[in-house]
Image (cartoon, rainbow, N blue to C red; front, side, top):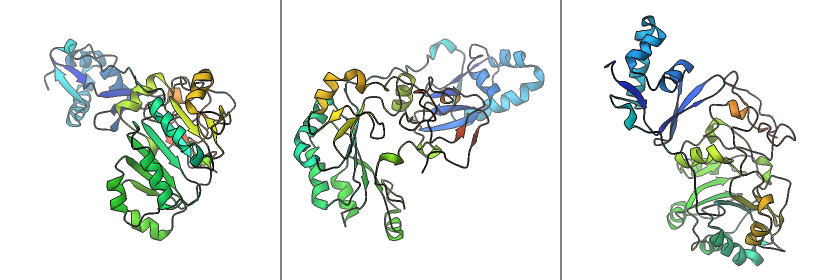
Length: 341
């Protein structure tokens, strides 16, 4: 390794420092790597130094250790060497979207058939890109197919289904015909259903029955998402509630189904009317970032993790999510998940 070179992280490899640990988020390869605090300082605080100057700063006795760690980072394709340090600017982390609402949750209820056309029209007007459809009762093939057909002309690019039953015999045909369906969560699944769907990446099954929106807000390593969109959005906005609207089973319109405050009811108004007349209430939680939330602000996972303001440790709007069992001060996951029942 030429010690007259500078060591640079690739622009898509961004370090995030927590109270105890550091990770490097590779937002191009959708993964993260753990590094120690000293290595973080070498890459960040001493980024304007050559390798030789870094070794001189820490002492010659640490030269082999520093070179070995930098060599490992090269092998993992997180860093590169250069003689022209100034030619490699950092990635612009600005997050922007033309959509008024980017993501929508709809809990299917008695209101839906009467209001379906109005709702679909508003999905188009608001520019909704992602839609989660939740069914807390069994749904027929015809009902589900009609809903999916009705939103074909919207700008929605991803559909997420929460089902009590999967009303299609031919799974492959369904997935081919409905390619905007990104994932299906099957609740109350039997062992036979677990076996049947195990080879389908888009289908997940859980044994317990999901009957309401109290199951939301669980934060765990499996829910981490390392990508440019979430990482940049998390710098400026809430990683769960930003630009979100929801209609719950009884027709109430909320920012999130699990939040107690209702903005109105779809039986009496429309989504666009709610946004136009109650914009301040709609975006109450949108600008709460992980850097403002207690404990989360000291967590290395804060930009790849979703948030939850519905279930939190206290009435303080900035308190830690109740259903997160990670402690960034000792770097450990607790066994018992609070608020998970």
